[in-house]
Structure formats: structure tokens, C-alpha cells
Length: 189
Image (tube, rainbow, N blue to C red; front, side, top):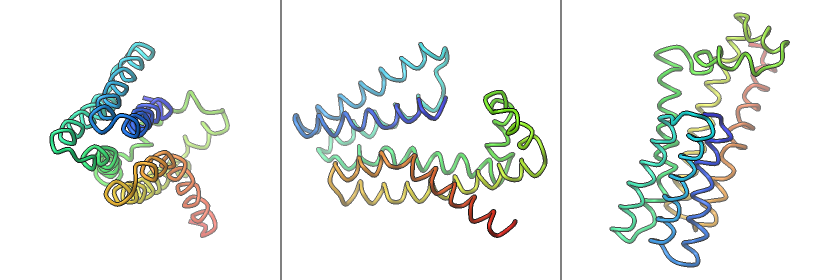
């Protein structure tokens, strides 16, 4: 699944939750978010021709955490849903980074046709693949930092602060990864 689709699936239902919760309460917000996530996942399936495990996992965790929040009448369980999926993403990327082929190297054959020719030439070389391995590591670190901040926001802050932190996740992860890359290039390794 492309990162754009994944961002829509992970952010839009939570934004719907915040708005509906504000006007109609926890139960309505959770139901609206789960319905939005399910409809979005089905729309992606219809548009892309595949229903992947990421979207099933996200909707499943959202549904389980939503049901627990409604039963306990406590929004914190639902607000921890992106922390659970973020933690799972960190573990998934870490597994490939340290015990198998780093994730970006694994998906490189799918990425190459999407890249300009000069980038294809770069990433096909051993030094280009070394860059991708490092990029994967920076991605893991930034994703873990964002997940930790999101956990704090879920437990300690308002819905507004929480959704802003969730919304800034992808830009933070990308910016942090670029900073890591920049620092690496300055150090000459």
C-alpha cells in the first residue's frame, strides 16, 4: 500500500473521531472512526485491487481498541490505537533491519520503476543500497520517537493535541530521516 493511502487510512478516521467525539461523545466518535476506517480500507481495495494486511491490521486494532473504550467509557484505549500500530511498524521494520534483509532493500525492486533513471542507477549500486539500509535505520528511530510522543499525547493531553501530534507524524518521520541522512553525509560515512 502506498504511504499516501496508508496516511489517509490512519489519520482521517482519527480526525473524524475527534470531531464527532467533540459534538456527540465517545461512542459516536469511535463508531464513526471505525466505520470511516472500514469504508476507506474497502475503497482502497476496490481502487487498488488488493486488500493488504496493513489495512486489515489497522482497522482491526481500531475496532478492538474502540470496543474497549466504549465498554470502559474511557477514550484512552482508542487513543492508544495509533501507538499500537506505530509500535508494530517499528517492530516490523526492526525485524527486517536486524534479522533479515532491510525493508527498503526488500521493496527496492518495486520502487525502482517509480524512480527517475539516475536514482535507479544510484540505488542499484552497493553504496546506494548502503544508503537505503541507513535510511531504513533512521526511519525506525524517527518512527519510534514519534510513537513515544504519541503515547504521551494519548495518555496526557487533549484530543486536539493528540490529533495534531498524530497528523505531524509522517512529516516528522520524513524530516528526521532527512536530518539523519544529512548528518551521515557530513560525517562522511
